[in-house]
Amino acid sequence: MLIKKFRRSAGIAIAASALLASSAYAMDPQLAQAVAHGKQMYFHDTFGGNGRVCNTCHVGGGREPGRLPDGTRIPSLANAAAIFPRISRRDGHLITLPDQVAHCIGGALRGNPPEYGSDQLNALVAYVTSLAQGKPIDMGGKPR
Image (cartoon, rainbow, N blue to C red; front, side):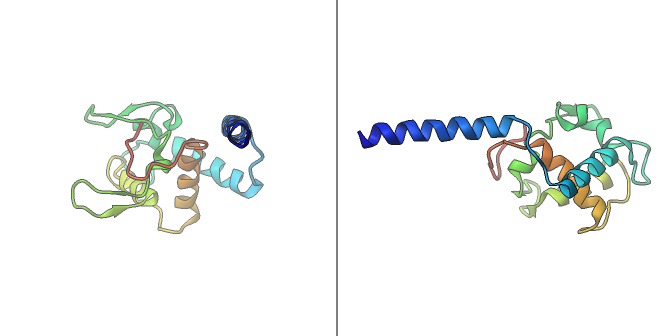
């Protein structure tokens, strides 16, 4: 009897969490403003670089797989916030999501990344993080 109750309540909890993850939710207004600012930069800011914007490579607002300037396919950013921090395959260092965003701006965009801790970098990270809403944390997992 106790096991049946547990299974039923666990099933309800799983269904409720899935519903919350997939439904609209009330975001804190300041956080929503940061996400909106990050999204605006994602689509429009070249960071003083080569004219490209984040959406040039990470198409569909980051929700779809994209391509680097050399044609190399790259995964979407849909679960990026859920898989960071991660270890660099190249040098074994720990990489955070702000590190990765700054690297992309400096690399593919040939731009000047915002300072760590700045409102601009925090807003970009907030936008990318918003794409992973409801995704399970999988530190070190594969990008999708």
